[in-house]
Image 1 (cartoon, rainbow, N blue to C red):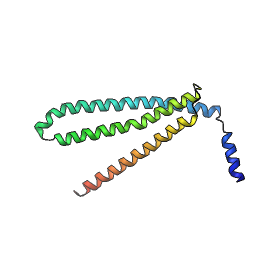
Image 2: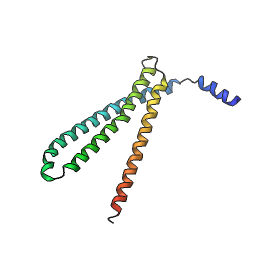
Image 3: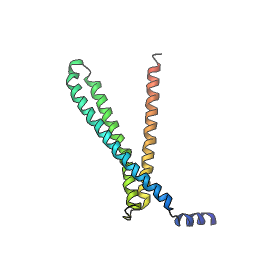
Image 4: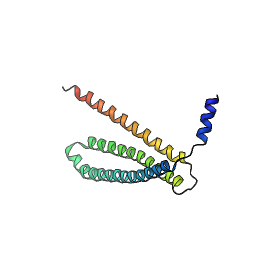
Length: 145
């Protein structure tokens, strides 16, 4: 009991050193740059897929591949929208952390860190999904060898 009480008191008395604060501010700035450029690139990719679909969509009827083209388009749109989520979380980490450390708006620091935690959780989830997709493709094509 005494050890837990001491740990809780130490945690409540926790203060950021100026060096740690500077690192968090720098991390928030870079996170904002990465998030904005990533969101822009995802939007450009989605717009490109819409343009490609409008071009291929007119030819799909002639070639008989309209179903697979629409399926690829829908999969691309779903993954594009899913790809926006972690970058939004990274952007929110940046804005919330900056609001606490730079602008002193009274926003608790844990709100920014919470978005960073969500960013990493989503990235791990995406990595697991991609690994499962790779395994599924390997198993599917292994029957041909």
